[in-house]
Image 1 (spheres, helix red, strand yellow):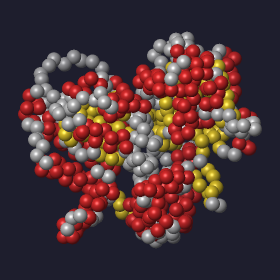
Image 2 (cartoon, rainbow, N blue to C red):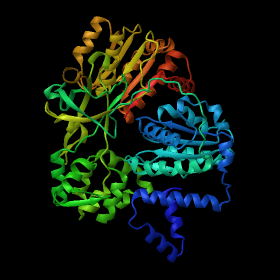
Image 3 (tube, helix red, strand yellow):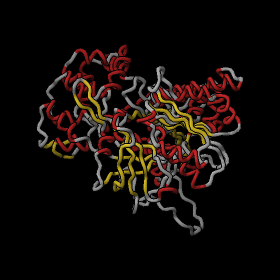
Image 4 (cartoon, rainbow, N blue to C red):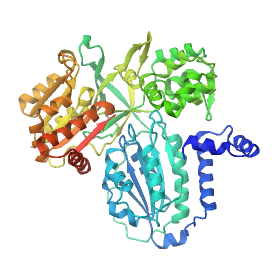
Amino acid sequence: MNAVVAENRLASLDGERLATLERLAEGLSAAELYWLAAWSAARAERLRGHPQPDPATAKAAGERLTILYGSQTGQAKRIASELSVRAEAAGLAVRLVRADGYPQRELAKETHLVVVISTQGDAEPPDDARALVEFVLGKRAPRLPNLRFAVLGLGDSSYPQFCAIGRQLDARLAELGALRFAPLGEADVDVDAVAGPWVEYALEQARDVLGTAQPTARVATLQPVPSRPLFSRERPFAAAVLENQTIVARDAGRDVRHVELSLEGSGLAYQPGDALGVWPSNPPALVRQWLSVLKLDGEQAVTHESRTLPLRDWLARERELTRLSRPLVVALADVSGDAELARLLRPDQSGALAALLNDHQPIDLWRRHPAAWSPEALVAALRPLTPRLYSIASSQKAVGDEVHLTVAVVDYRADGESHWGAASSFIAAAGDEQRLPVYIEANERFRLPPDDARDIIMIGPGTGVAPFRAFLQERRETGARGRNWLFFGNRHFTSEFLYQVEWQAALRDGSLHRLDLAFSRDGAAKVYVQQRLREQGRELYAWLRDGAHLYVCGDASRMARDVHAALIEVAVTHGGQSPDQAREWLAGLLQQGRYARDVY
């Protein structure tokens, strides 16, 4: 049920009941409100007459909990893995499966299922879950009268169709006859605010439904226990800065950095295709901007969720200041009473709101729609600061206890005022004496082919070329036999040809077999990588036909879509396929892992 429908139905209650509900909800945190919603949903299920399974029966039958996840950036995987570990510790029989590794025929046999899945961009599933989502939403999906399920959707409320994939799966599973044992969870960018209590509730319900399995006695075979890294997202490693240099010309009009960090002593290991998570602090100049515009005292102590810090520290290290979100617009509209902001929140203004969220930072709205904020209300309205993920630009086989990044620094002026990116500015300002809090985020969907004789095609304009530097280093170090073809694009050849010397050296030593370039602003007509794909379509299709793996890294909103469209054209023109066949062909490559995308 969406928020508008829920509000309309609440309005139909008599005044006394509605007032009671409002008094009950007043002052509750987001997590507490979620618990209340979960309790209400479970009560509603009982009132509708749905039978509650007998835990003893479930345990006797040896039933298990299957946890499926579809993840683009690793968040859904992290939460699903956490739920799996906790469920096993609680004595449940558990199976954790990535969506593209799940045999679809088994869905009809499942009895207890949890799905943790993200929504990408404009209501798209993550690449590893496309086939499963199409199957569940399609005509071939089986009836599921014996299934109990729960869905946790992850998304970004800055997009009009927030958590659309989670909502679709939740509704479809119910339509197929399955019953929820936990209500749909919808987590925003500050994932843990909803995911934490949702996991607690889902685990509690799963234990009630399944019971706890009694471990059977068995002889233990002594074997080495795989070591776990000491450092993680929750406990990042303080990495020393070894090198931090600009790799574009002074007249490029932007700053792109090559950054080298030391992982010595961390025990952290990574593979080409993985990402490095960086926990940033907001730029000091941005914090000063906020305090000045909002006329607040940075030294004032603010208590929020049992923590007390000076407001300046909340803004510097704890709160998101550079990303505008729909909930923040809602809060500002409420505090300011601004009619223009309120109008943007109407359902028929979703396009205008999306443009606002994409093109502006919160400071822009503070200036245009001034309002009197208390420090406590401001801290409560802002999202928690979250880590940023950067594609790793090095192979550990080549660089040892180091990790390299390619970082485009966000630093621009708009409306006469300076704007900065949180993490990119934080990294750019890091000198030799500083350490950056980092962790490794594995990306199993973006891996080199196990068969090193396979050819690879890499499409990475701008900083999207970062993982392909790692790929090439790895292929060189391992003596891979397959050919390597890189498509790279940027604005100008002379000022923004990232890693030019390295690519040219790789062409000379034979570790890079083909390099196709597109510099969009060097001629009268703009040329992008997708045009080069079309121009080289015959050979590109021949490589793919013969088993090559294809990789795309970079901007999801435009580049990745344009590249996908160009690949369809290549298959039609040079493969003799119809457009529908070409789309199915690419979907098949995605499912096989031969077409992988690291897009953001």
